[in-house]
Length: 267
Ligand code: G3P
Ligand code: CA
Image 1 (cartoon, helix red, strand yellow):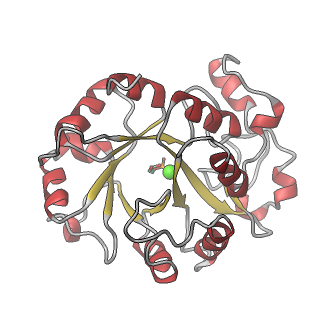
Image 2: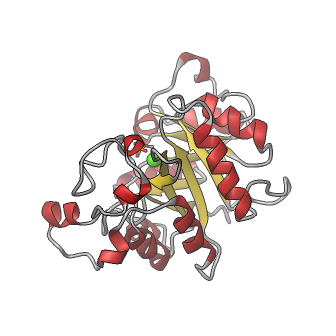
């Protein structure tokens, strides 16, 4: 795959600067913005009372001092939990957090943070377990994006927001409701139907895991020939960053935005 010399790889902070601060907290996203990340990645789930919150796991057990499924808890319940202290337990309290920075993060608050960033910061929003909710995750997401004027970007301009999913059905729902909003099809492995570089209908961006590139670097060329952009996750090791550069991918999604920017010679 050949790119013009000015090809600039976008650096996307995965769950925020999640190596340095607890994932999916304001602390992690503020750090990513300070580090110079081009975009922020977040996973979204619906609470029992219909709020979109940024939590990766089905349950809150790993990343908070509470227990239970996000879908069974109301936002007020989640607001009583601390989503930061687990990081202290695992790695020592060496990140610059505060209580206010580590409460549950709603997608609405993250959109406000991005709006106030003072520079362009894009958002890559991943719908988690959308099949369980039969369209509600996408519906709530698009309503929220509409409130921020982000649901219908002009087709001829780069969109500040994109929606990602491992579920082609979830992406289709987004496309049907909001045809100009870019979608990213995430892949943990390459299924036979996508082996030649074709993606689900309407999807223009491929989201392969870094393992796919390590084992099948030629797949990038196939995706590019089919006209797709390529956003790779989760790229934390220097040699993987170098592989992405060699292959000419379009975005690197990483827990370590500062280190990746250094590796790319951008800081
Ligand atoms: O950016 C895509 C990546 O986040 C998908 O995997 O499990 O970290 O959500 P996961
Ligand atoms: Ca994710």
